[in-house]
Length: 64
Image (tube, rainbow, N blue to C red):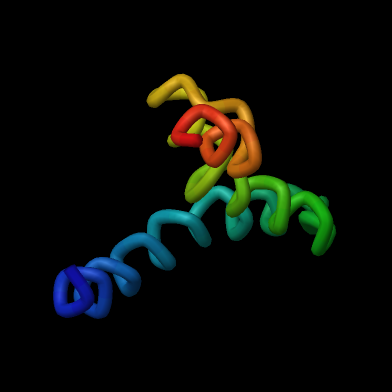
C-alpha cells in the first residue's frame, strides 16, 4: 500500500488543487480552515460515513 500511496498522492494533490485554483481565479481564495475541512472530508469523514462508523472512538467501542 505504501508504494501506491507514494504514487497516488501526486495525482490526488493535483486533483485537489484544481477547485482551489479556479476559486482563486474567480477572485476568492480558500481559507486554511476550508482546505483542512475538505481534506478531512476526503480522507476521513467520507470514508467513515461509507463504512458506517461515526468516529474512531465509536469504532473502538464497537470492536470491544
